[in-house]
Each structure stands twice: as structure tokens, then as C-alpha cells.
Length: 87
Image (cartoon, rainbow, N blue to C red):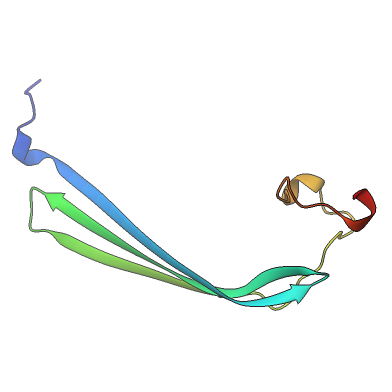
């Protein structure tokens, strides 16, 4: 087996930028209802540098808590979040 040359190597670099907005109060908790993520992939190596951009835009139309039948593990609230009756 022939050892690979250093010029055969390919390197990838990823850059991710996210924007989250449109916060609304739902049962006393602010929940983001829209956002955008832009990912840029850079490829370095054997051939000319390549750059690819991927953009995702999302929106939440409906939010609810304590949905019957939804497993508890589906969403883990932050440890410092307490309900009124637990305080």
C-alpha cells in the first residue's frame, strides 16, 4: 500500500451563525417562534477551495406544555426552572 501524499488531503471548515427571534410569552415562559441558521462549509485541499452555504429558516406556529402522551424525555427544562407550586 502506497502512503498518501500531503497534497491528497482534504480539510473541511464549518461556520455556523444562528438568529433566534419573535419571542412570545407562553404560560409565563418566553419562547422563540422563528429563527434562521446559516452554515458555510469551506473545503481546502487537492482542488481549488470550495465554499457552500446552507440556510435554514424556521417558524413555530403553535406551542403547548404538558401534552398528554408525550414522553417526559422529549423536552428537558433547565434545572433552575421551577413551577409556582414547587417554590
